[in-house]
Image (cartoon, rainbow, N blue to C red; front, side, top):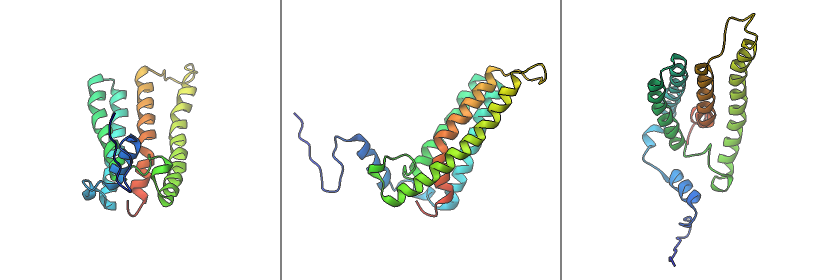
Length: 168
């Protein structure tokens, strides 16, 4: 039997989500990246890395795709930490202001993501009629679409929070 102690105002050691939320909200190690200008540079790096992954897929070199995924995942991880998980924490762990900010940015992120996704899907749909369009989708096109949408879906809420919020 383990003895559990919980300090007032601190999460119980049993709840890993609460521990993670508390660590994100109290983290001061990345304060140097939290000024708005630096967050916007990080947003640019994240978007460039996502384009890099999609481009690597189109070039069709597996080693290049694997190598380009590392900076994309690193940018996603940094963005989450810099905005203190505001875009990803459950409702129970954020205050009302953070919840409103997150929900507004989620609506915008989903609208942008659906718009960005529709265009390639329409191109692929039209390419199915290869008699008129001289384009046959290949696996590299589908991989570029998959990784581009996947990485955008993961990072877009944090990107919007990092870009638009004056202070995090």
